[in-house]
Structure formats: structure tokens, C-alpha cells
Length: 281
Ligand code: 13P
Ligand code: ZN
Ligand code: NA
Image: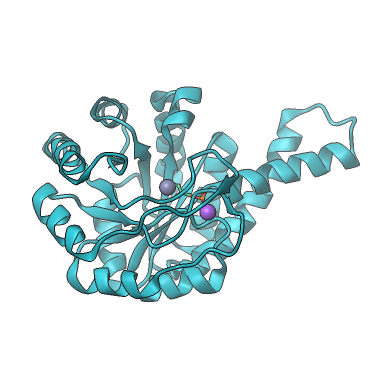
């Protein structure tokens, strides 16, 4: 069933596990992610970034996820990842997204609060929960190589949550989008400190390139949602490339879709087990 992120993330926070949030680019990735969730009886979030929305439109992605979610027995949430404006958040909600992120992390503290609060007021009036970001996760969406940026301040996190009324908070503790140039240095102590004083679900971005052990450790310290994007794109595309190399005569897009789906499903199932959300639907 298609649901909002509110209940699944609140339950995850209380239960000490995390919901996996997976970025999808096409129908095949949506199907692979939902099939993985069904097999593991896991709640799941599917998300699209602004560049993905620009590529396929929010109405199209929402329709695909809605059709697949309605067939599923597990709770499925459709989320706007790194929402870049109030207008885009409003558009996605209008087209059926059941959760949105407003990413004001490029703004200064006061302007991040202002834009996040404005989106919260609009979204809550329509029953849709909001994720915001404080501190800067390194790298740029859609880049393959990233460096870490500015970590979240503990006291600012408390004030930010109080003043905005957001439902979940993405924090920066040294992760970055894309794969890593060197070994990522995670400030796990900072995560534990934030989790002590902030009671809403906390979100870890940039999980591609973070080991299963480190993801599990962050979850045990209070992360309730983990975002995976780049590694799904790589798994999907590598499987298609392999088919092309092994059987270059293949011309049916369905044949590429099938191997891509299988690779994404396998990866997603592994990461769901790492997050501890299997069996939690
Ligand atoms: P990765 O691409 O590093 O998995 O980051 C995912 C993410 O944070 C999406 O918002
Ligand atoms: Zn992110
Ligand atoms: Na990453």
C-alpha cells in the first residue's frame, strides 16, 4: 500500500532500526525495490531527486510507484529527495508523492529554517510529512565522486527541529553523495549526541560507498532512514553492460531491464537487512 513516511519512520526510531530509502530512475528500479521489500516484509521508501523529476516528471514517477505500491502488501512511501524549492515540493505532493524533503542546507541557518518551515506548513496542511537537512552532506547529487562537507551542529539541530516542525532530519556526519575518493571519516560520536537530544527520526544521506558495518553502526546510534542512490544506478547499469558484452545481439529493452532489476533487487535486499527493516512491515 502507498503510505506516508510518518508512521514507518516513527516506528523505526522507536524500534531501533532504519527504513531503507532507495532512489529510482525508471520503472524497473521501482519494481526491483518493491519486490525486495515484499520478499523481506520490509517497509520501504522510493525517492526521486529533482534531476530525476526533470527527466521523467513527478506525475509519471508517482503513477508508476502508486500502481506498484497498490499491489504490494508492505508499506511503500513515495518521497521527493533533496527538494530544491517550495514549488517543487508542492508540485510533487499535488501529483501524489507521500513525503517530501526540502533541502535548504545551502542556505544559512535562518534561511534554511525559513524555507523548511514554509514547506512544513504547506505539506502538513495536506497530511504530508517533511524531511529537512541541517549541515552539509558532501558531493553533489548525480556525481560519482564526492568529498565530505560541514557536519551538523548539535545545538543547532535542536533549535532547527523546534522552530521548523519538520518530521525527520537529515544530518551531516561525514558522509557524501556518490562513491568516495578516500576512506570516509564518520563522526559517529556526533550522531550519538544528536540522537540523544533530537527525538524525531534522523536520516543518513550518501550511503553508497559506506560499508555494511558502518551503516549498521549508524543505525544502532539512532539513524532511522538511510539513503542509497549511486550504488543502485551502478548495479543496474553494470548488469546491462555485462549483458551487452556477453550477448551483443540483445536488442530487446526488456532483456536489459530484467538483468538490471535482478542486480538492484539483490543489492536492495542486502542493504535492507543491514538497516534491520526486514520483517518490520
Ligand atoms: P549515495 O548516492 O551516496 O548513495 O547518496 C544517496 C543519497 O543521499 C540520496 O539523497
Ligand atoms: Zn542525499
Ligand atoms: Na556516498
